[in-house]
Image 1 (cartoon, helix red, strand yellow):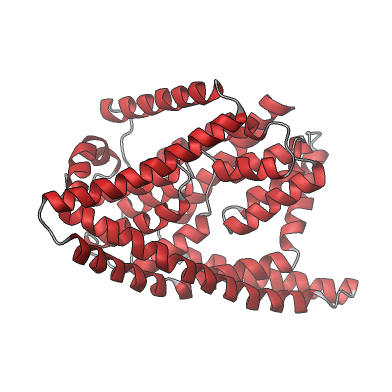
Image 2 (cartoon, rainbow, N blue to C red; image 1 turned 90 degrees about the vertical axis):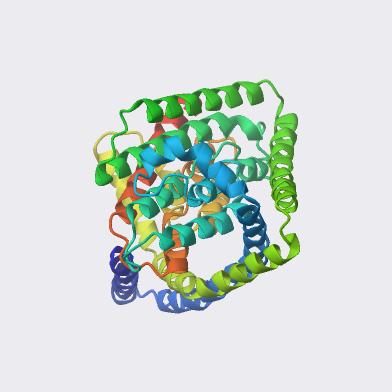
Length: 410
């Protein structure tokens, strides 16, 4: 229901703004631009789905081998203590906990292509536990908030963009992004727990979060000892080695269980193809709405209004020029990436705005895209508090990114 009203608002606000531009400023280009955006966004949505087909088929095939080989069940048992606290409605030791962990791990390593199919698999398993098939459950919402908060340990793609844009030290945003995304995830867990009345003040969760903080600190220290070139090589190699280890481990587990590994892969791959087709309408809907909103100039008006408000209050408005990346990120990953590159092109890769836009890009994820694709894949219509929790986590990431950028680069 929330997504429904947001989608409607995109069109109504865009139409009103375009009409005002036409009547009062004689802007005859705004409506053609909006219509062009509907066609281009529809094409983009289909191309994304088409591109996902192969990746979904591959990873759901691998996951099916892991499921039949018992690997997912082993992960579920290992993660049961913490997951029973964060996901109290999931039966202890259920295979979905293994799928959730695989998805979160892929996201943390910046492996977007692997993360999406693993996440869709987790959503299908969560839907099996759902008694109201059109309504999001508490575990679904907690899982999606963990996704939308965008916890990333190795922001390889952002560092590559900075190198391409001529940054003197492409990796100088690594620690700020790590800190900002950690606060975003922590805020997302806390906010969702308040909605769902989950008690976070218990030994298991406190030890887990404390351990995660220590691991993050260790990664920061280890990579901080390397130069930029070595850091990029180690990060990229580690992520790809881990992926290959997962694939080999799942295959060997299937062989050990004496299952037909090939047939299991084909069975899972078929599910991947069906899922890719199923999400096309949802992607078209959300991307067309976003495209029309952008083409009308509504995003520019929001930015100008924020700048005026900050300056009227006597605040430092240096961060405002980077806000398009932050505001676009919940709507469109590719759009936010374009905003980030534009900021670095306009202001310089090593400028405050250029660096802050990179931190924004890495501190949160594409909330509406994730909600549309993940919920759409299992037919969820009533999203309950998912949008509110996801956007509040995004807001926490944005605020943390601004504060950390001023701390590191002002």
